[in-house]
View: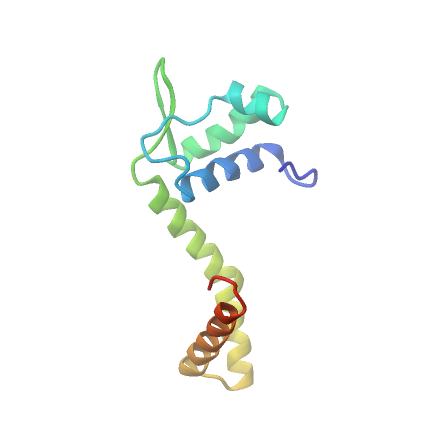
Length: 127
């Protein structure tokens, strides 16, 4: 999982976010400790703590004194909104710009998307 080209603390934060998004780490569930993360990924505990602190700052995790870190209520919704915004910026906005260049309107794009999604389903891929 570790990508040498990216900051480790960001990768730790993203791994926890993925666990929340795929529901393997439920809201109000206890998150792995920094020591557990450090041992699992074989990194310095301070690096793991930096990733956890980032999620605390975003309101994704919260600390219960003397017990540990827990997933905040509503964390999954926050992450989904954030991901949707990033998805729109990265993929939808450029798609719309290219569609305008090609003279395609919203209905044309919707038709293309439906066609492609149907083709992906028939090839055995989930759409």
